Image (cartoon, helix red, strand yellow):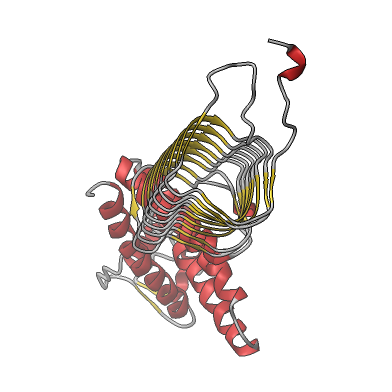
Length: 373
């Protein structure tokens, strides 16, 4: 065949509205010709209800009107570089299909099935994957405006390096083997979702909204717990609680609320985060307890004359040993009564007793969290 006839058609342009419902589009058997629909331009609306596309190259195709692909079927189709103004894939079956570097202003994959579909480096102004089945599909490097995956089942989906610029909803979705190493600029919701194994353990810098980070930490914690990775789940819990502290300040509407939030955060940090990382770090809790007991024992050694029953005239070692005993009894709130404070030392002993009561409760929480679950 004459080689200069290989690409007889440079670009087809369809100016009128087309109705191709029920049509079957297949590739040309000869390798001498590319598909005549490559880079084709459709200016009007296109109706492709129940159409079937098999083994065809449609790279660069562009639709400037509405495309209706209700109950259509795609198998081994290349739509790389395609452009869509508004396209409806509702109840369609898309398999082994490429949408690499494609552009969607409005896309609807409602109640559809997608298997081995690649949207690498594609952009979506608005996309709805409602109640769809998405298996082994790739969204690497894609950009999303409003994205709604509510009610969908995602199995082995990759969103690495993607960016969600607007709201991202995964409510009621079922997620397993999904990688969310991406960036979230807007709201994020996994409300009512069934969480399997996912990866959304990403730096705080990738979240623009603290509420989105809180939601991500929550679902990652659930995923780690399902995997049995308890230490990682605890780490997510700590990050979630710290993000909530920051959000409490950020969401304060006036000066009074900001003061209340600051006091709340300080008390929470002092009693929960600092000594034990919200009951997840038993080593830190043990060291802080030891620090409180020994630190107060030093004070009691110096001011032992304010403690009735304290051997103030004994040697330093004996005084420190008695002070350590008194501090331990005070910390654990045992109160044997053989020694008791007087004067201003009552305040110090009361503070240690209160601190000890909180720490003892944390010790119970740590034991329950770390060893008994």
